[in-house]
Image (cartoon, rainbow, N blue to C red):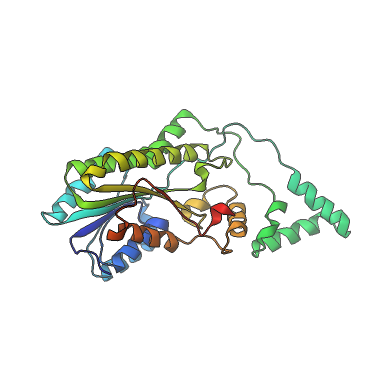
Length: 311
């Protein structure tokens, strides 16, 4: 199917991961795109060809490399987009896919010797050296034997910098409340379509305590609460708001988390399909939620994880 040629998607955080995959999916189905991202100049040699491919699908594409979390950045985008939309264009969907957060501990961590003790016990049982078992386990894990993750040393966190007030404030704003600022400004400018969709992304960290994830987890809780509030208060204006809980996916955002290899290993073992979530899996759900037939889905948290959560 093809979307109405006057409809647009605004993707905040659209140069990689879920945001870019969603842009590609929507473009193939005729949705015009406004992509906001924040990347260094050196990264554009990798990103620009992706944007060029979007253009090649025949849809209109405008991109902004600026701070989407600032008032000035948001105003610049909406000023220019308002001119581009003119009188006929309307925003069908806003996807907030910003990945910006502090991954610091609350207190200095204590040393976890359990994996080392288990390796030593295994070495003694096999009659080989501790170095041999360590190298064997490491090589096996790196070659895809996910079950060996319990024998790997835990990730190393900095014990010098603890999570502070400013870390919480910036993270909660970036990944929690910033979406509301975008929605309110677009609404005030009357740029939303009569049937519009607000989508955002959360993770299992919203309920599971991961070491170093406290600020991001707090931001996700805020995000989900804000999304529910928008679902209720914007509904009379034809705007639906939903949150997608993606499974663990090997994105740039995941790779900055200490111990991400262990997270991926455990998730692959838990998932009924035996693999990680792909950005395209989530993009498919974004597409589905943009369809007319999804109009009665509002205020929901939708798991797009292949059943990982129940594993």
